Image (cartoon, rainbow, N blue to C red; front, side, top):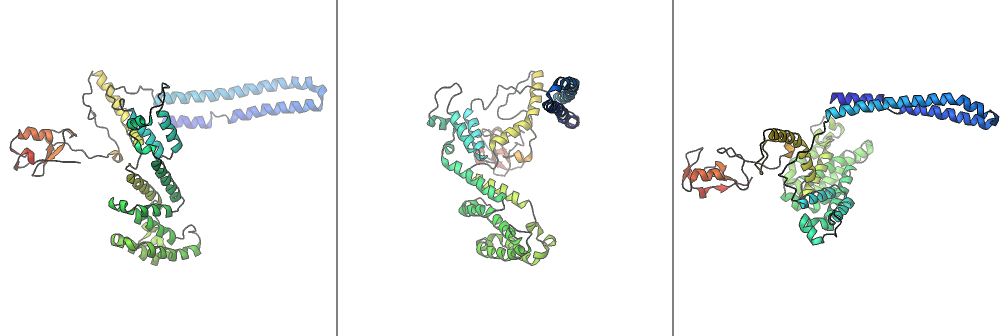
Length: 407
């Protein structure tokens, strides 16, 4: 990669059109000067053109030399690119789980466009999906809905919900918390059931915003007035938060004594944290999508990114299996472990300590009365329909006493 960066720097500094533009401009200046001379004295036209012939020819040669250097630089850069990023074929697999599920793919694309705020593009995409690529008549709307499984997408409610989300996020980036606070109040009950702190955290940030002068933090008078504005806001809005957030409210109140030196106060992490705005914007997006029954991140983006991370390993695996003439026989799991980042781990898994196999829906984890857990198939082999002893402790139990675990 270092070689590629070095070649790119050389291309940017040497193989550019700046010198060519200068030389072309010199040629234009020669022609303009000759035209003005002929316009001033038409009898000298032949002499002027004769004198102009060699300079113009030389200037064209200089421009061609400049372009040769430019093409040479592009050629060197192209060679480095081809060396670093070799053209490899995409893996071909007979076990393509999505080949028979075009509806799921179309739904993922449509949902991605909607949650990214591309409402007109999503609408056009759904319209195009209704028409087959062969140009046949459009699918009936009912058939399309059944194929895509996107009943909410055809309604205007989801589009309006995402439009509202982007409007509130825009106001948040403009340091206007009021629309977000109003939304959390409208959905206070649902957020509380989720155990969300968003409503109080937004109110806390509004207190900090007012306390530090609001939209004029550099105005000394605004900062002084901000102390009283923040106090009034707390009295009006923090009453019903006291049972859950008394400690945080006490910190906000105590910080008023440190208004002149917040930077060295014990509360500087609350009042001088520049990352709080971005954190709350992300938290708001997560909670908003959760109330719509959606994940905070686009499933299409997550799947594409995870696939890009996994692709080199799968390509290498395909090459090895081809050389050894082996086959991939398991459809429920990959034959090798793919090291994805922690943020891409969404589901807990359980490996049976006896069989060393990962549990599945068909072979779920089962907890015995003693508290130890094994896979269902392992439990069947151990019990054989009668009482058996736990492989990890002396407690005996019957197969019907085991309970299925849901992770």
